[in-house]
Image 1 (cartoon, rainbow, N blue to C red):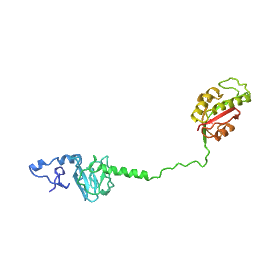
Image 2: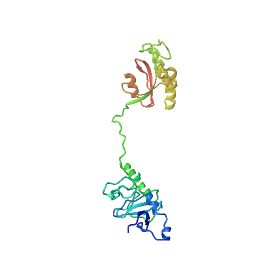
Image 3: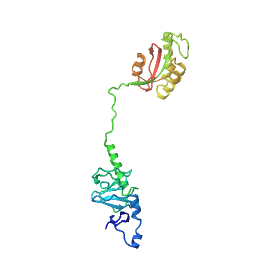
Image 4: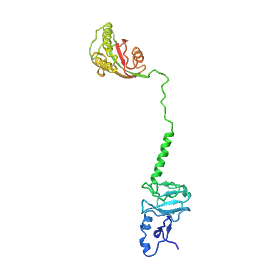
Length: 273
């Protein structure tokens, strides 16, 4: 005799059985009818598939394949009719004709007598943790990118502070300090040498040397970088006049130059990067 699916109850091993008569039928709770309304099965299950009651969601059933150990919330859809419900958002539809290959919410090797630990019963958390561990393993298996040092020990760029003293032979004998500069070149060199002597007093302390240099630049330099403490920022080759470039790249970080002459005037340089 064909029994309507709405009247089925679940046996202790998870298989569907006809309802009992009389009081026994009334005592069967929760009703399978409400389960099937929320999660109706296909007209017929493929061989090996059974429907089981969820331990963590008593009002919900899931489907278990006794051969493969695959569990899923959605019914195996290979034999489902057009009236079957659409695929759940949490599981994609399997390839036609191959119910065992259907993507499942969770997977285990054999039925378990204990309940799952996650919301998606059974053993959803274990499956998610396994997937996370697998992804993490793939990340760790990829070799880390190694930094490759430059084939040359010389830097591509340097950062420097400088103080400029212009003279009447400079290509533009004027500055923010003096609208018209009439000093001789010799006077400019003497002024820079005096500044170097002051700076050398702090040469043993890099922080003090830089602080002293910046303070002197703000009041003594004829370059517009004076407002930044003489800081020219980073620059590469062919960005400055050749004598200035050569002197800057020849210095070590924290090292002070001697007198450097260019067409702009006379300089002292402190490399800081």
